[in-house]
Length: 323
Image 1 (cartoon, rainbow, N blue to C red):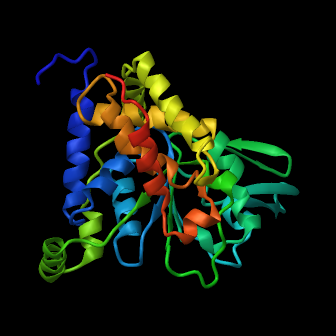
Image 2 (cartoon, one colour):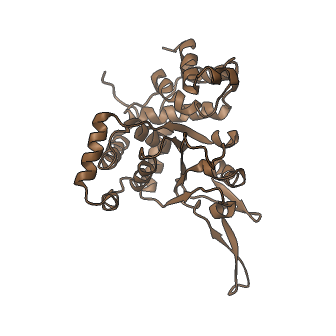
């Protein structure tokens, strides 16, 4: 069905296509993961990426960061990591005869936090303010983050030795929780073919070209914000979130931050798909990624083997879809 868009999304669509092409030079498959990451960037949200080792979680995030011409930093979370290792610390400068604040790796544009669940609660708390308010307060002084500011965190769902459960308040600050699965048999062959033909992975990564400048990204975000959403879709999103709070299978429902996240990400996905309006299908497609880390199942449902995605699917079936 052809329609004339009320918002010029050509530049956005060209940028998305070019970014996917650059990442596709190295990453095989993972189309849904890449699209969700791009959606999060347009919606100005942080992302938690979960998957078993070796499925290119870190590599995908790193390549995506390279396609945006901004500062990039990587923090490897470990059990002995301290908040000052993330935020920075004050160091005495003998020339000035005073203390000088040395910024930590969190002062960047795109931050890759590898194995975020390996750091203890004290270090996790260092991310609370910076993720929500885009600022960090150290020694009574507040430092503001430059835009864009996106945290991409990875975690391993299988290995629990030396890991810590992320606080619910921190999980709620992530726009999406993306699950990365194993590649198919055909994709596995493509991965092997790529490694066989490629001389050096580091050289291949270095050849990835930046597609967007920070100012361009800011303009595309403004266009994304203008995507039309009808009132009945706002009510639909609200109903989905409300149902998580009244569901007997859930111990903890989603917060109002979840409804805002579902709205903003649906607008971004619609823009990526070349539409200037949100459809119920956009909301339904993104609901699992927005909600799976924000809801807690009751012990009984967990023992029955149910997953958060199962509950979200049941909720979506019960709620009338606006047309």
